[in-house]
Length: 448
Ligand SMILES: *Cc1c(COP(=O)(O)O)cnc(C)c1O
Image 1 (tube, rainbow, N blue to C red):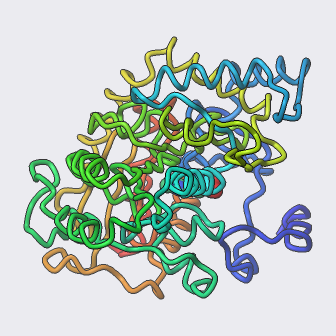
Image 2 (tube, rainbow, N blue to C red):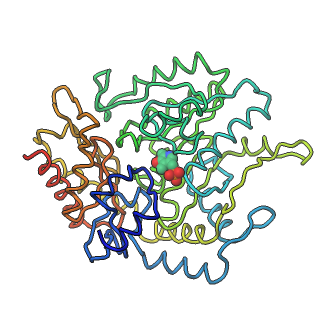
């Protein structure tokens, strides 16, 4: 343990960690980043295969983003956002409206993903209260969902690891069994099916629609559950169903927005416009905390009235619309526009698919390799025929994580799922290093 690790141990409580684990394996103290690499105090490099918790798009310490940040800091670092505004936020809102699926015309700022989810839930609830549907007070969620860790966001999720102990504090939701394409109970495959599993959603909505304000989903990929990828037809059906019963379709694109799935926003694959969309992680390309909820004119109008009607949306965060974050977000959008990012990603994604398939097709413990755009995931199983996983107590993912680190690779497995979600600037050579390193770590663990 070096001096900094000792001080870290003395003063810091890390997120999502059993602090006792750090006794034998202290945190790696990072000194600098460049491109897809992070460098520790001793100069060791780690290829950041998870984009530092899914936020980084264009590499660490990117020169264009650095310049945009420095320029903004030299003129305005922050200003109150009620009764005041500023160019970086105005420009960002306008650009987002032009990029987002048609019909999303108003942008509300918050400062992290969970806060965006809270905003979307409150907007949906208040909309129904103010349009005479007082009985619409509940939300419907999917199994295996993850929507953040503040209490309302946690209530929308379904991962016991994060929520179990807090159950007495959480809002009640209606929960529907979501798609599970690797273990499809209908015997279908995700590339060709018409989402017969949507019947579960239809049945639940038919039963509860009178009390439902909104349905919240992670479009195309249930991330934290282990990069569970499902077909876009599910979202098309959901859009129609929500229309039929006046229920809001809330798209949590916090993880998948900004190009991750191959399109700028995942809902584009289904050609649907949600009523509310939450964006965060990639919005500042990994630089600063920022989030937005974009919504429709119809929802906006339900809050638009004389002050005395008390219909305003009384929600704020101190750092709402922070100019530094907005300026970096604008420069990130410039990079998308000027550097043909989505096009280049398509070639990289195809390269990744081909390489992983070639290297893993007869692996004894890899049950499935699935990929959507710049997200790839290997699901490890103890038995390929039964698709049985490993008990969580074995901490297979953690063991592989530690072996990968020793090879200069930062993975962050989700249970038995080893995933790749690299910054978009990754090269083919670096992708190869990533995949081969991950496989080496997996094989070392299994001794194969
Ligand atoms: C990360 C994430 C959130 C929460 O965002 P935070 O900024 O971590 O609060 C919500 N929904 C999804 C789908 C996410 O991946």
